[in-house]
Length: 379
Ligand code: ADP
Ligand code: MG
Image 1: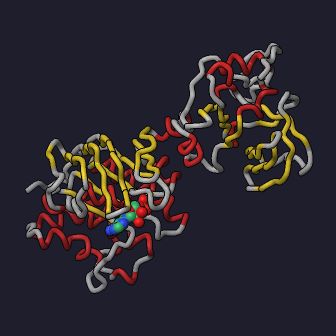
Image 2 (image 1 turned 135 degrees about the vertical axis):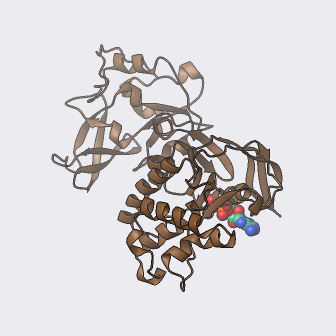
Image 3 (image 1 turned 180 degrees about the vertical axis):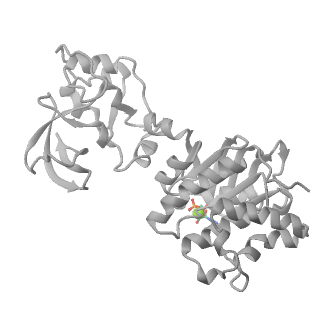
């Protein structure tokens, strides 16, 4: 029996996983590689299949098709208790009549881990989770966050190499969620287990995860590191799902004044994407937006408006706000412009976008300025 909490998780590989119930196709051809010791978030809107996928990894549910490998072993049909993993759910049922210590070590007791070993692990877990002073309290005497910590403690004390969590923080208030996000991440790094973490909250996913698996209607939409997901969304779905407020999407023709006349080059219609934080108010610009409303947030503000026929939101510092009805010249850095095929929603990478834009004289805002020389292309 080891005395320290073991480090090093096992990798998980899902190949061609599908799941259907009668007429409902909950998952279709899901392929994901989860590296050992990584923190992977399964992210997506409600009903997209996150919990189903997690349950298939855990063994609480079986796939209709495909393969589940954990640590190089095919566990597709193995029962949950043969997979050596722990789970934390949104509703973490603690035993109300047991104190914190007993709740945490409950699983070790049923597994007949010797008393001395139990105590050792309990001390370590309690210290990690800041529960040392609460060990003889009953769950009813704890705050929501403390209860959640006990539930986490119960999962990590098992020293499994894989931990699965399904929206474990969604019952907590916003402030506590933020604290717990950090704590969970530290805990996972320190113990080194492989974490698969389900959430519908994009902030949670991108702040915590090494790798985000964005799901949409039972399929994998994109798998990427948080920064790549934000900076290079592969589809308009990803572009809108990651970031708040979501990326502005508008027909690329609305930017023709800015020199975005690239339809000819690609042969298909394009959708332009610009994040609210990528747009700036310029001194002058060929692009002009009419302000329709202001959402004041303190540190900054969201300016709502229209560019041609397209609604647009930009994020500006909170001090100097334009008035509704006012036209404002807009600037953005060429590298902040995303383009998507209007028909498929897939990202389009055109190597000459930046040069086209700089030739059109769009001021580049605060970042990535290039010298403009006016020469606008026609649509
Ligand atoms: P998420 O966790 O992303 O909100 P779920 O995995 O819970 O989504 O559900 C995905 C889809 O599968 C939904 O349409 C849901 O109604 C359906 N579903 C989930 N569990 C069952 C079940 N046991 N029987 C039938 N349909 C189910
Ligand atoms: Mg769910």
